[in-house]
Structures are given as structure tokens and as C-alpha cells.
Amino acid sequence: MDDVVIGMLLISIMLLIVFAAILFFGKHQQIKANRFLGIFLFLVGFGMANFVSVKLQMVPVYFHFGYIIILMGPMVLYFYIRVYFRNAYTFKLKHLWHLSPFMIQFILWLIFVMSLPADKGEIYSIEDLSNGNLYVLQGDLFFIAVIFFYLYMSVREIKKYKIKAIEEYSYSNRHITKWLYIFIFSILIIPVIMTAVADAGVFSNAFMVMGIAAILLTTNVILIFLFRPEIYQGIGVLAPIRLKPLRDSSLSFSQDQKAQLFEELTSFIESEKTYLDSGLTLKKLSDTLKTNQNYLSRAINGISGKSFLEFINTYRIKYAKELLSSKSFSKYTIEGIAKASGFRSKSAFYNYFKKYNGMSPVAFVERHKMSANS
Image (cartoon, rainbow, N blue to C red):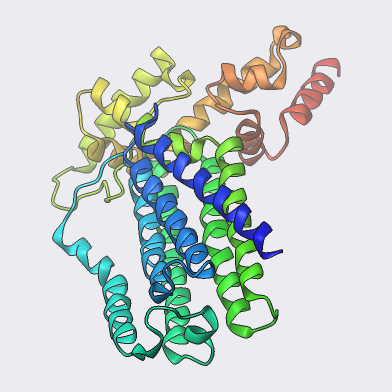
């Protein structure tokens, strides 16, 4: 059985390396976030290779070094999330602190290796180095703690994006954030379960359990890559977002100026029907009106009391109601109405229509028909 697991692990390692190479050198290599994702897959592949080499006693003295390398994985995955929404990354010295978990465990590993007795030379089995060893136990607990820390940091980054997106985008990317959540949770939770089960000694063959978990991890990555391409296509390339606050209290912008800019904005939107552009962003409008995003955002929020997304969607829903009420409605499907009104998806149209009208588009049509016949 161990031979089967080793064979599947070797296939998993090759697949991870291939995917990493595609992210670095393929057609999506201009997406900066993919560099971090490629590094993450390489680190996972390296960890699996180390795991196999220890089992085959090729380099047994380096046991647990694979864990130290993988320790950088959650941090790299966090930076992938950070860069994903911006398609930009600037290295700063303050980012070096993220290497501290790796450095701590590397130093402890050196101390551990140097403390090994020399009578066996370099031939140590997994059991020799792991059973009852406090160094291995603290390493596993440290590994789990690092995973949960960067899981928290990644979730916080996605939530920050969701808040800022409604200020800059006229469309929702809920499906993207949903799949990012699934991606990072599934990728990071499997190693936690794998490590906990191995340490608990629930199964006699720890190698087989950890090997199967590693294979499941690789399978999960491959399936998500195949069926959810937005994971590596990057929203930041299509519409990069600034996750720093748009508002600046130092900007002098009176209520009268807000009202004047808001009037100019509404006049332009209503005459040009820019809300029908499903890819409309705050930056596009601010560039057209020859103002900046800060002023425009503050004018919309200050006068209408709505976010940019909500403000644009009120126009879209109004336009959709006109289409649904018209005699030519029979020529359109609900999805056609949604796209004609500036919505990117039927589900988003349904959600916002019900939110603003208290009923679905179908119910609205039925009520309109009843009113017309009465």
C-alpha cells in the first residue's frame, strides 16, 4: 500500500510543478498574483518530495525540513490574496517580518539536527526522529498556528476588498470572493487535519494517512484550477482596486461642492445612460467628469447616502422596470433584461431587483399584467 501512495505522491509532485510552471511562464504570467500562487504550489511540491525522500531513506537526516519550507506556504498564499485584487506588489522592508516563523523553525531545526547522535551516521527512520520528540511536536503546533494566523489575514483581506468594491465597482464579484474563500480554506485546512491526525496517532500507518491527505490536497488544487479559472485569472488585471480608504479628511470639499458635482454626475448618467455599462467603475466616471475618485465618492455618499454600487444599481433597476413594463417585454428573457439593464448576471439582477422592490422580476411582471387588465 505504501508503494501505491508513493507513486501517487510522485504524480502529485509533478502536477504541482507543472501548474507552478504554467503560472510563471504561461499566458497568465503577467498577472502578478500568479507568481505567488506558483511559488505556493512549488513549496507544496517540495514538501511532498521531502516527505517521499524521508520514507525512502534517501535523505533521512533532513526529516522535518520539508515542514519548515512549507511553513512559508500560508504566508505566500496570503500575499497571493493581497496582490490578486490589485495586480501590483511593491516589496517593503516591513514585509520581512513575515519570514520570522520560517527563521525561528530553521534555527530550531539546526539545533535539533546538531544534537542527533553520530553513531548512526545519517540513517534515521521517521520513527527514530518523531516518536515522543518534543521538537517535532512543537513544530507541528507551530505549523498549525501559522496556518490559522494567515487564514485569518487572508479572510480579512477578502472582507476588506468586499467593502471597498462597492465604492469603486458598479457590479458585484460575490462569486469570486466565494471561490477565494473555498480555495484558501480547502488548501489550508487539509494540512491542519493531516498534521493533527498524524500527531494524535489515530492510525498505525501515519505515512499512508499523510500521503492520502497530500494527494487530496493536490486533487483539490487541480479541480479548482480546472473549474474556477478566476482563481488564477485575477480580478486585479480587469479592474484593480485600491484597498486604502478613498476618503481623505484633509481634502477641502464643501457641501455645496458635493451638491454641484452630484448634479453634474446625475445629469451625465441620465443623458448618456452610462449605468448600462456593466463594467462601469468609479474611476471611469471620475476620469470622464475630470474629477478625482475621492471627490466623486464623497459626493455620491454625502448626497445620496448610497455607495457607488447601490447608486448605479438604482438606475439599472429603474431601467429594468421600464423594460419589464413595456409591450416588447415578450421579446426578452429575464437574463436578457438583466444584461440590457447593465447587470453582469441573472442572479445579481434577481437579488438587487428583489432588494429594491420587495418582489422578484417575475412577480413584478405578473402584478403589472393584473394592473393593466383591471
